[in-house]
Length: 288
Image (cartoon, rainbow, N blue to C red; front, side, top):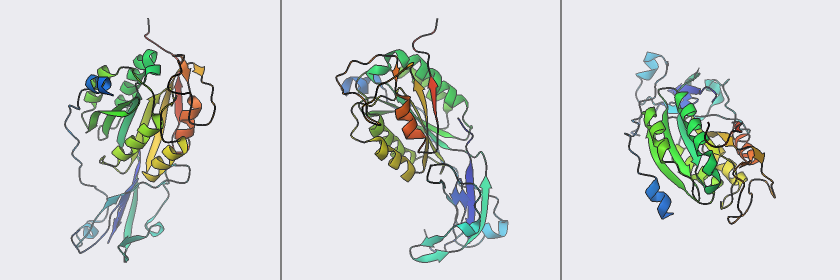
């Protein structure tokens, strides 16, 4: 996982972090699976106030506000070299001056791990659990993290929390069953990430990339990610490249899939256009 970063800007003021923006304003401002995935257990993350190194005199001005933002280019990559003059802030039609801008590298992020538990992942669950542990152990302690599983639909295994160890404990409920709605689940994950504490939003998909029941296409999923300010990364689990008929949608729901298949291309189409990368894990099944 790449290091997270954030931007902060202050107003008379706006604040921009990785982003954060601050502004000054004197006004007030299926059934089997459901039973197999118990309800979330850890305490929800409590979002701390946004902070920055804006001058103390500026922060004391009436109506001073800071707002976290994430700025990306057309490929979904973070834009870092920005100053206060690069932004326009308005309250309705009223312009607000941006008087301070600061970039803070390696700031906290809201991270959602989306684990594929469809029937085709039966032999891949051990690697999925290892991948979740690896991701969680590399998080910033300040990050809030959520865990979702998905097959024909997504399941919330743990809402956003800073108790990272709870995410690892929740791995034990993962089991494989059902069809795969990858792109529909990405849409749900993107919406959920808007409820995280931070402007930097990161989605980590752990899957074989074989979608057979989504209503959404890969293009629509990418649009959701970009619109939501989410950078996407994927861990593709499987040995054999899956044959494809068209980009982003593979097989029908009744096809018996080889458990070693992986559609790295599908995941790459998703992540490469949303500011991230896809990594491939070839080992399948339990280790000796």
